[in-house]
Every structure is written in C-alpha cells, then in structure tokens.
Image (tube, rainbow, N blue to C red; front, top):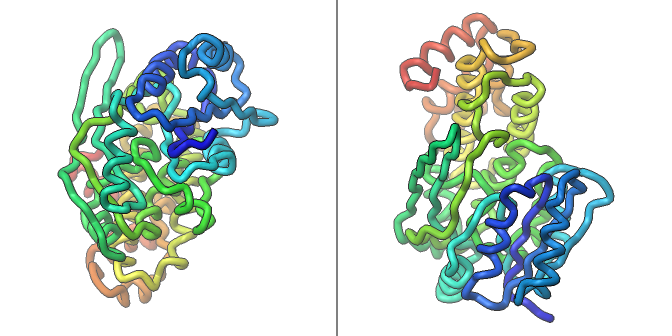
Length: 344
C-alpha cells in the first residue's frame, strides 16, 4: 500500500507511556499514514504493546515495525527510519509524546498549498514531576517563507525562535536523501546536530500557530537537568560532543549569506552549555576542569576569520574570545556574563 506520510517513532523502554503515542497516531483524521516503529531492542514490553495494537486496532495494519540488530541509540534509530521511509513526507515523534487528532491533516494541507519543503506546527510542553503538572505553550505566528535563503536568514536572526527538536514538523523525505543529511550517532542532542543546519536546505517553509504536538517531560528525560540531584559528567559530555559536530560542519556553510548569523547561534548555544556546566558544577561527578569548560567555547573560526564575517562581527567576536582566554579568566567571564543573563 502506498502512503503519503510516514510517522517515524524510535522506541526504547517506554512501556509506561507508549499507549499515549499509539492512540494519538492511530486516531489521526488524515488516512494515508504509515506508522513506522523502530524497535531499538529495549528490555521492557514496549514492542509487545505495539504488536497488540497491530492485531487489535482497526488501523493496526498500517503499523510497521523495523528492528535494529542491537540497541544502537536514537541517532542511528532516526537514520534507520529514514532509510526505511518510502513516502513523500516524513514526520518524527518521540515514543512517549502525543499529537492532536488533526496534526497530519493540517500540516499536509499547508505543505500542499504552498508546495513547502517543511511545515512546523506549534506545541505544548507538559512537565510532570512530583505529582504536579505544568503546561507551557510554544506558539508560532502564521508565516510562509517562499524564497531561497529567506527561511534560514529569519531562523538564524532570532536565537530561540525555532525549536531545536526533530519532532512536530512535516518534511519532504527527499530533503534528507538528496542532501545526504543524517543524524549523528549520539543519544543526546542528536536532533540539534541536524535541525540547526536543516534550514540551509529548505527552499519553502511554513509556520503554523495550531498546537499539534504535546511534548512530555518526566523523570529520566535528558532535557530535565533541573530535576536531577546528580549529573554524570559522561552524560553532559555526550551533549558537548554532539554540539562539537555542529561546529565541525561550519566551514561547509561559509559561503551562505546568513553564515554570520548561523555562527552566532552555534556559539551562543555553546555559551549556554558552558553556563549549564557552571550552574550544576556542585552536582556533577566527576567535575569539569576550567580548561574543559573553556574548550566548550572554542570557535571553529580563527579571530581573523571572525573579524572578516559579513555581519555581526562584534557579537561573534565576543563569543569567540571566551574560547581563547586563559581557562581561569574564561570561566570567570562566562560565570559573570551568565549571572547577568540569569543563566548561572
């Protein structure tokens, strides 16, 4: 059977909440959907539950399960989903989140109307800790970007405007395949390493104010540093390593007219990471050294190259300097600026 949209979901040890995802996907008003489940060889009953839905749900025949040879992590999992996708559009979800009933219908309508490469829906963040529930709304304005470089220039102009996650956008599958875009083989911030550069490959994009995705934050989530009483240095280092892959790709994009804005976003993200390390230094084991914190801010550009950027020279230079100062002075400066910005 031919489908228009593949919903790709990596699954690993989410048996407590996977019903939420399955119910929301299988109740979509849009019919031409294949639900592609990536079995990453977990140790609980997650895939057993998927098999039950395959056998008993009226739309169970539209569920396809692909199994990894062994547990290979979220980055490799997303790549496997892409290699198994044969539809014009793909939509990623996390296995413990949910989408609104008309999510795919609304995104697909906009993609067809504007011949868009990518369509983003708005989303809500739901935090569930200690029996309390807190909701936050992240809503985009209704916008269309229909000219080359327009979307990337807009996104990189505003640091926090666009989500760094890989879920809740409908995208042409060929954007990944034709441009050889792959997720990095890491388990933390694997989406950031892809989504930060994704606008560079998008010609036409649409933003929607409709809330189409519910993003749940619970204990055990890598996004919830604030809920931890202890942080493993290894865990934080994996995030830093993922971010370093983004820096390494910078030189491939130097010719783009918005490169100076992209560089600022990349290095500003590293600054926030350095502030996070400092903020949680008392609960991180083993601790980061001053040199390691300073090295987070090492720019892929030299000072001379930074000064030759087409724009935002002072903004980029300020961030670049954090990476060349002596470690003690760099950490002092990061801590001071971070406190002024409420990050430390």
